[in-house]
Image (cartoon, rainbow, N blue to C red; front, side, top):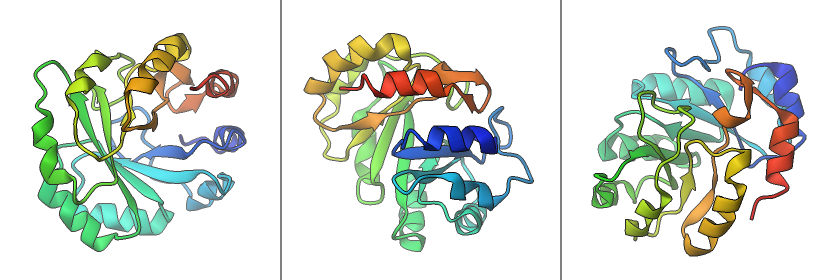
Amino acid sequence: MREPHNIAEVAQLKPAYVGFIFVRDSKRWIGRDFDPVHLNLLEGESKACGVFASEYLPTLLDRVDYYHLDAVQLHGDETAEYCKKLRTRLPDIEIIKAFGIDPSFDFNSLVPYQESVDYFLFDAKGKERGGNGTTFDWQLLKKYTLSTPYFLSGGIGPDTVAALKAFAPEASALAGVDLNSKFETAPAMKSVQQLSAFMSCLP
């Protein structure tokens, strides 16, 4: 998100996290002049999460400090070693590492990340690093046997409520869902009405 009035509206719904995109080539990039004071619009229950992709580590650390972020979501080619360094430098920040999932994805590749990240995020593998608006076959997650909890992402919208209710009971490691493009009226602008209706139906 990036528009103050929209941040304030969404904050009233008390989502667990509100995301701020720090990826310059993203159509949802917060821009050069985004004021940290806008994060004060968040309610106490909502954490400010910065989304980065293959960012130079000192730059990421600077952004976390400047914006007082509570969490970071890594959507690039970050290695397990990168995450380990980040954990060492930011022991109190939640780290979420995103992966694009398709039928060929090897869940064993996640093992080295477990000691450094708090959550994984599983998204549909697409042309963009996120916000493609497409889902993947959630049945692929039956291959996931690690203990690290994960967020489900990729094309989740008002039309997926029934599928989520059916999937959630068999997904013991599911920590939550990532709501993005399906609730947008424009890039980085969320429909409060749609979000509210969807959140009231979550399993």
